[in-house]
Every structure is written in C-alpha cells, then in structure tokens.
Image (tube, rainbow, N blue to C red; front, side, top):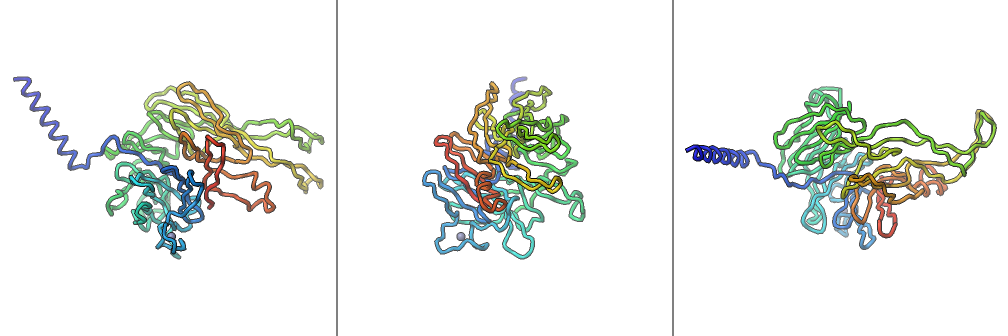
Length: 416
Ligand SMILES: [Zn+2]
C-alpha cells in the first residue's frame, strides 16, 4: 500500500515536470555555449573585422577573403552581408556552429545611416543570408554570447528606465529565433555589469563594485556571492579566476643605459611594469589559490584543456633614440618599450608554467582564443611601428594576431 502511494506520488511529480518542461520551454543542460569576442575560430578559419567588413583567414590556404561571396558586390553598404559599418573598437562577435563549412555570425553593428543606428545582426555565411536580431538599440552591444536559443549581451542603458540620464552597462538577453523584445536581466544588481561566461545554465555577471552574480537561465533569477573579487576575469569549471594588483614592479635592463638627470651620469635603464597575481577560488568556498605572480592583466583569461593562458609582465627594448629635453636644454636618450611580449600557459592541476613564445615584436593586450594548433591574440606590432618612418601612424590597432604553434608563424589579421 505504501509503495503504491509512493509510485503514484513519483508518477505525478514526473508528469508535473514533463508538463512544466513543455510549457516553459525546458532548457537542455548540455547546450553549447558560444563565447563572444573580437574574432572567432571556425573550421580552421579565423573570422574578424577589417575596417568595417567581416573577413576570414583560411589557415590551410593562407588567403584572406570577405564573407560575402558575391563577385559583383563592392561590400560598401547595408545590402552586403559582410558590411558592418564603423563599429571600431566596440565591435563584438560570436560564431555559432551552422553544421556547414561556414559559421553563423552574430555581430554588433553600426548601420550605414546618418543617424546613430545600432543593431545586432545574424549572418548565415553558409547560405549568404543576414537578418536583424535587434534593430535600433540605443547603445552598441558588447560581450555577445549564445546559449540555448538566446543571445546574451551587455549594453549601456539608463538606470531607472528610459528617461534617466544615469547610464550603466546592463546585461540583456534576446531570443535568436523570434522577434521578441530584448529582456533586461541585470536590473536587480545595483551597479554596471560585465558578462564573464556562461556555464551550467548560469550567466556569470561581475559588477562594478567587484562582486560576482549569476543569472540562472532555469529560474530566470539573479543570485549573488558575498566575496569581493578584485579584477575578476572568468568563471570556469566551478572556479572564479581573478587578479590582485601588487602595484608596479621595476625590471633593470643592464644592457641599456640612460642619462640620470639628478645623478648626472649614465645608469642601467629601469622599466616599470605591471605586477598582478592570478588567483582562483571555488565558487561558494573561501580558500584562495595562488596561480601565478608578476603578470600583466589581460582583458580576458582563456582557459583551454586544463591550462590558463597568461601574460607575464615584461617589456621589449627596441632601440634608443634621443630627444631634446626642454627643461635641461640638452639632448637626452630615450628608450622605446612596451609590455607584454610573451604568452605562457599555466597547468591548473600542478601550476607548472610553460612559455609558449617570447617575441619582442609584439605588445600583447589580450589572448582571445586557444586551440591545440593556434593562439589568437590582440596586440600591436611594435617593431613594425618603431621601424616605420611615420612612427605614430604605422600599423596600430591590429584586431587579431594568429600564432601558429607548430610553425611559430605570426599572421596579422584586420585593422580598425
Ligand atoms: Zn558584399
């Protein structure tokens, strides 16, 4: 008798679950998260923005091509699927698996009109079709992610409704299949937010005060952690990864001498560089685990195959030139230096650090993506700039650099 009651109870619970699943558009737990960024890798090609056009670079052929396949199109207006307008540095991008040779790309774009007219567009490269997910949003969207039929993004929006003059970065989501209105998901958080990652159905948001929250896509509610994390970069596999600023550190370059005005003599050159430490903490726990010291803080922290990819604090000496010091009325030597010029990986199980490359040509700002064969990073070719006759205008603002691990080659892709 007891057993029968339990069975009936269980059956009714299962039935209730099934009914609520079908009614509430039940979210599959194994859905792929498509992470946004400045560029993406798909099918051994890198997709990136080049002066308002979306192009791709084929690693197999070494060719760069427009995602618009029409040979008669000049790719200069809204009729072209590759044209994004002047989105510049605010550009955000995410590639979804189309099942074909080319991805579906979601992109924040500025439409080619006189007025400020911003949108998020969905471009099916395989079928050469594009459509707007959202048209006429007031501020450009960034930090685009795709998860389970929703596009998640951040954008500046008024704090208390459309009449407020007080703006902050809020998180939104919009269904990618329909023509639904975008839904504000960060209104319960009392500051601006950044979208760090989506994992296990949770959209991790990091607020301006240094606190971590998540939007639960199953319950559509916000939960918050009460630990303060300085410079939080990602949540990965149940851990939160964050940096702590130790101030600046000084590295002495014995081979380069500079004239010390106070001592009135030449001294070994000292370079001040960033000094951040990377830590992680299991979500909901309080134990802080040190991962690495003496780092430059990157705008992102990629974790791939059990390794985090980090930027050691470093600099490149490219040469010496003289400048005229107006205070002392004399010719002074100056050096040209930048941080950082190397990428390292740190194995998260034993914290062993491996140098991937050191190359003084690059000032690396961020690592976007890592695979077994490539590393995609953002940075400037400072050697090319230094060597160029017109120093200030040469080759700045490269969108992405592809490093081929096996051959050690660097491929520069796209410019703002
Ligand atoms: Zn075109």
